[in-house]
Amino acid sequence: MKVIQAVNDKIVVEVIMQEKVTSGGIILPVNVDKDPQGYGEVLSIGEEVENIKVGDIIIFHKSGGMAIIIDKKIMKVLTNKEIYGIVKEIEG
Picture 1 (tube, one colour):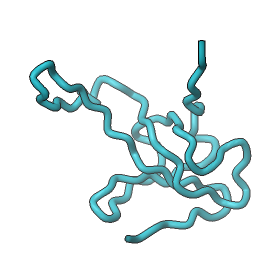
Picture 2 (cartoon, helix red, strand yellow):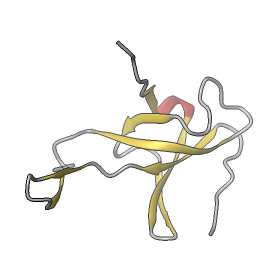
Picture 3 (cartoon, rainbow, N blue to C red):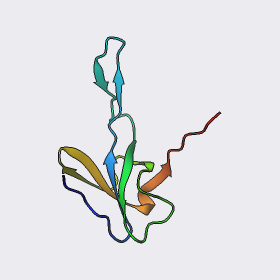
Picture 4 (cartoon, rainbow, N blue to C red):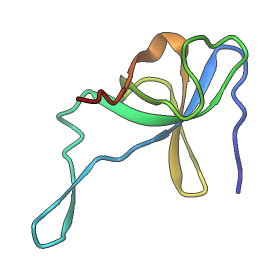
């Protein structure tokens, strides 16, 4: 297994591919052409990154950053400025 260690102000995320499952169990990819945002799990952060930690689920513009493929997984290398927010679960 290969990993990428982020440096400086970079953030490495694994892109989360959204999909829908029909009642019959067929998996259909969501039409990503209509959604401008992407989602990803933070795998690594550089030493200059603030307010984001490994394991966070973040939102970014799908055309932002640099896309790479490692071990058949799509990843993005982003800067802190390219992240719109962190997805949080609210109880209640």
